Length: 144
Image (cartoon, rainbow, N blue to C red; front, top):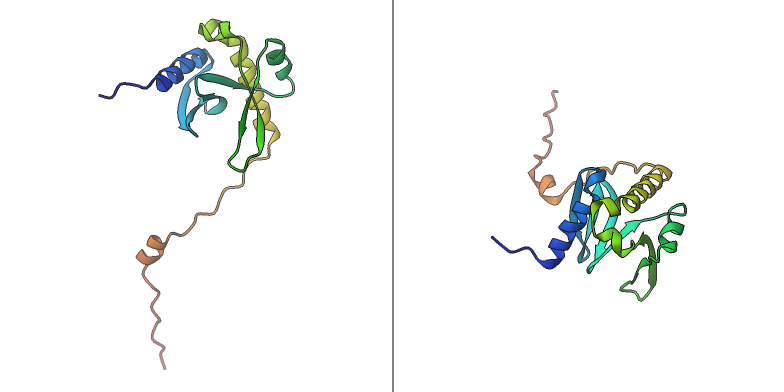
């Protein structure tokens, strides 16, 4: 059995911190991890840092606590700042200390979800193998 990497162990700890809010799912993404509570995306992990979802209502509390936003430079050289912020160091020590921050992140994510129109379902794409597996229509003989 493979030994978990330090990054996976950190992601596991972050999941434990958020667990009092509901079922937590951790998903690898872009060299880090995404964390979902009840299938709502509430946090991301980049390196060894946890960033929680914020919005205009919750961001001032994260700023006042000394947090900073998740920032990155894209492949095209553009600088991006996302609405995910760090929490105070003591919040990383226990689920109880994380709860006020985690609740704000979940509320921010739910507000964001509610403000976005629902995505239109995508039409299924026909794959080349599916098209090849479909028998061609045969012409009916005409009666005459």
